[in-house]
Amino acid sequence: MIRLGCRSVADSALEEIRKETERFTSEGNRAPSLAVVLVGDDPASQTYVRKKAEAAASLGFMHFQYTLDGDSEEKDVLALVAELNARDDIDGILVQLPLPRHISEKKVIDAIAPEKDVDGFSPVNMGRLAIGGESFVPCTPKGIMETLRYYGIETAGKKAVVIGRSNIVGKPMALLLMQKGVDATVSVCHTKTPDLRAYTADADIIIVAAGRPGTIDASYVKDGAAVIDVGVNRVEDPSKEKGFRLVGDADYASFRDRDVMITPVPGGIGLMTVSMLMANTLEAARKRRGR
Ligand code: NAD
Image (tube, rainbow, N blue to C red; front, side):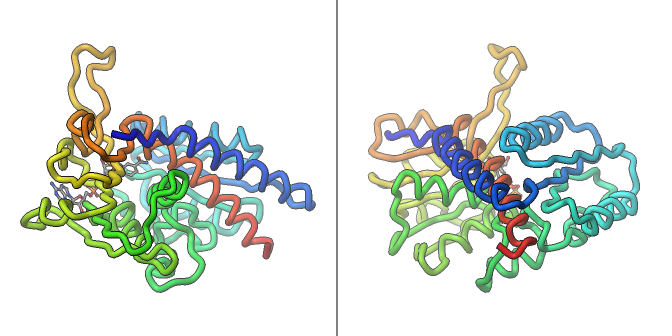
């Protein structure tokens, strides 16, 4: 087994963003700026938002955080997004998901100006990704592409299987892998796929984003394959201080004696998302200044 750790991938991406940001500001542009909106006090969301703020600060980006009460009304969130859309000093807007149930995520995401939608979830950016054209690529699939490139994993002419069809991971991932220049032949599997193994057994690249531990194990995979494990799942573990540990969707231990490359959890794709958000924010700043 070859472990495809992502710490070095994320660090090298951040280093590149740092250099490009220095070049950008040395040309007289103000630093890229990111607005992050958090609604409510979900602990996991608070952690994600803090990591984004830390990364923005470390790159010298301007960063604005807006924290609204969990019982805020949908119209309050929409009003804030409208205000951020209109502000010239903000390049990128990220609304941390999930939102409280009484607020429509779709409406809020639709309201973000496409040129500031650094999460890439808006219909305009998803549409551009599907039909070609410049778009913000959602951060997790973008981080997976970066990881494949970093480790020199060939995609052209290869068989790729994406397990999961969500709008934030599975669908954009499949679109990226089938793009011209990437050139994989892609199958997308989901909960209604009758025989998952029939697809994975012959795949060169497997992206598993199902949100279920043990979705695949080594018996699903041929020798020489690359497995990218996107899942982040909590499983009870009394031996841990917090009472749980994080595992992916692939049964990592089962791959130990196999000739397979695999990203670990933790230490894998989860590390890529924040740096890709910073890349999108720099891109938004550049595009807004026509560079
Ligand atoms: P989701 O629940 O929206 O979608 C899961 C998809 O997997 C669905 O399309 C479903 O049909 C499919 N699926 C579930 N079980 C399956 C099975 N047994 N066989 C085949 N298909 C199956 O989840 P999501 O938002 O796409 O996230 C997926 C996982 O990735 C979660 O564990 C999430 O926490 C993680 N995630 C990680 C990052 C990151 O590391 N930065 C970012 C986003 C999501």
